[in-house]
Structure formats: C-alpha cells, structure tokens
Image (cartoon, rainbow, N blue to C red; front, top):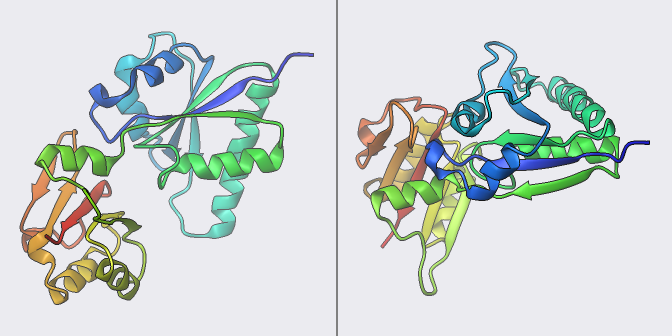
Length: 235
C-alpha cells in the first residue's frame, strides 16, 4: 500500500513573483501536483499566475473550481468536491501544493480546504509554507511602520458591519482592513465620520499591473478592485 502524500499550503505572496520565499519555490518544484483555486466562470487563478514563473515547464497543474456565490451550501459542496480531488491524489502517494495568495493561514482559501480535508480524511498530512501578506508588502511599499513599542495593530475584514469596524478601530493604534472592496462606500463613510480618512491609504493590486496607491480615499472608486486593502495609522 502506498504511503499517503503530503499537501503543502503554499503562500505565494501579494502579487510580485519575486516575493515568493525560497522554501515556497523549492516545494513547488518538488511536489507532484500543483493545485490552484479558480473561479468556475473563467478558470483564472491569480495565485497560479504569480507562481508560474517559478514552476517547471512540465509541472502538473490541477485547477480546483469554485462558484462565485454566497450560497453556503454551494460553497460547502465545492470545498467537499475539491477536497475529494486532492485526497485522491494524496491517497495515490503523490505530494501536492495548494497555492494561495498572501499567507495560507491569514484570510486564505487554504483554511477552508484544510478543514474539508481533515473532515474527509483526519490522517491527511498537511504542512504550511508561510507567505508574505498583502499588508506587510503594502506597508513596506509606502514606508509605514505597522506597529512599534506598545502600539496595537488591528487586522480585520472589511466584510464586517461598519459599526463593528468603528468599535474595533476605536481601541487600536494602527489598523489593516482587508477585503475592502465589498463595503467600501460604508467603510469610507465610517472613516470620514471617525476623522480617520486622512490617516488612511488604500492599496490595490500591489505588485501587479494596475497597481494603485491612494492617500486620498475620497478619490477612490465606489467599488475598488477585489485585491484592495486599507492601512490606517492614527498617529
């Protein structure tokens, strides 16, 4: 009986292919299968496009399709089916790498796959290769210190209700709001009301074509690009 293979959750960073770690590149060239999440509508994978310059020409790539829906049952079904696809390859003794933007354990699709795999096969061997997060890269790009000394740093999701975000920001010294695209108009209004708009930078498509750095969020579009985040520095 073949020994089960290992699945690596590999963070490919925020967008610039040069920000993959040496370990990530080594793992990607050692595994048997590269798994990449993609929309069922267009089969495009941003994570795969970032990692591709580092892949061998003969690399075997398996795209895992996910529907663009908020229906929890449809999403659970997609994760289960994709977990079954990955588990089948691991059961054959093959190793795999699941590509994910940023870091696998920070607001990542990998977390859902890990949960589905362990539910399906609790003895699945999983290892994580951390990646550079979008907010670390954004802070480095504009030269902002995220936190120092006794300061606190809030990392939160823009999908939360504005009232909750306001309460979180009230007790944090500095903050990162990820996933700003969905509720940006409400987030912008909340920041303006809290007098933090002039302390905010909106970063979109960092390290990719169409990169945008806006220090005046009043000039930002109503719906920023999907890959957008806000950095807030109160002092």
